[in-house]
Amino acid sequence: MQCRLDKYFYRATVSNKEYRSVLVEARDGINQTPETLKLLDSIVSPLILQGQSPYLIIENHPELKCTEKTIYNYIASGVLSVKNIDLPRKVKYKLRKTQTSEIYDKGIFEGRTYKDFLNYIQAYPDTNVVEMDTVVGCEGSKKVFLTLFFRSCKLMLIYLLPDKSTSSVKKVFDRLEEKISTLGFCKTFPVILTDRGFEFSKPDELESGINNIIRTSIYYCDPMASWQKPNIEKNHEYIRYVLPKGSSFDNLTGWDATKLASHINSTARASLNGLTPIQLAQMLLDKDAVNAFGLREISPNDIILTPELLKK
Picture: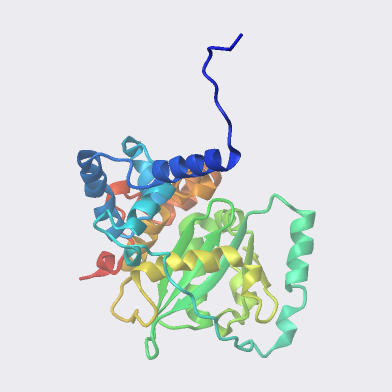
């Protein structure tokens, strides 16, 4: 007796080709209606042009209902008004030129080497570590930025110095101590890790406060080892979004430095679970110290990380 049921033959090669075809078609194109894509573009593109990252935009606009990766894909596909060139991180970095240490008095490093720093942190792991550095302008520009970066909350302070000298750095330390007291300085800046730049060549003057009371401990990275303080080096890229390499700092004011720091520290970070450095600093650092820094929290949609920020 013949079976009347339908019969099917499975052919692996044909089935695999059909599967691959469906897979490609499902991922091809933009999964948005023209109306929703237009709305997405109206929100994302202006903020990208303000220097904000796709992560920051998604974090502050949950109504977009898409991922950071989707935004990058849409920009790369050319369906948004902005292009890859408008993204601050879509750049190529040149290898840095290595330079010899500017400090010639090797005696100051005794007890202040990177190895000494690691031994101290191992003994006191809860210590609040601050990384210190300077950022220079174009050739011939006298003014420089002094930056202080708190590892615990990623807060970066920016101070404009009239020149790259030890006395200018000391004046910033003295002003901070006057504002938050010697005890407050000790609590906020207990350990500072920096490089061997000439502007940091007098650690005794930086460590001793206004009344010759020890207010901090200075440690130095090894020669040509900026990777030993990677956090502040990485965070300097925010400064370069606003003041690219080759910019002069001579027309800037202290207010400009504070404004720049406010916008940078108001930027949410994925590494902080969506919090901003200012928000975390208010929870982890001394409140009087945070108030003395003079930073202002900027609304997410008002954050600008392009040269437009400091245009007069």
